[in-house]
Length: 267
Image (cartoon, rainbow, N blue to C red):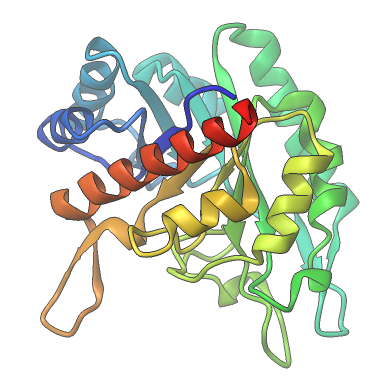
């Protein structure tokens, strides 16, 4: 097995990027929050800094307009473009079904980008429900659909536990992620075993659970956003504000799990 990827998201300044790199983070992720105000010189400087220090830059656009995305790629020039919009719709029976129309348009978008930018890698978030609800989301079906146009998969937690399910239930409407809740690790493990695409495990990953998560799922890497944030006086995670001690601990525990898995392979 190779080195496990440690990925940390919502790094929006060069100073924060430099700190993440010094703590051993491999993939440093940033977010473009608006398709109308997408040009941010400070964020561009952040991505350039990530690339110059030897880490990989990953960029999430919270929109899916092709013309704007192409402009974003040209301006920021990230190593990885990450799509986390949800290609699903409620099925009316307390679950989700893959929406073929949405999937087709998303696949075509990724295909166009890969054909236009041969060196650019693409990560596609694959939603998984919380533990015990994995059958509510067609995770493996979606992975099969997106595999031909993806370089990485990232599992993340889709909130589906309610009488009615719609994309407005997510922390960011229409997108999967930043719930702070773990996804069903059994399903994540099935995804790892059923796809050739490297899977990065996200969804509530924090120093407290990263070791167990790796040993259970055996992913190609782990990703954290909410679980490595600073918290306010009420204990609520503060977006775009990382806790260096948490990141350092998560990185160290990832390396411990990596060594444990390597030792098992040698036995």
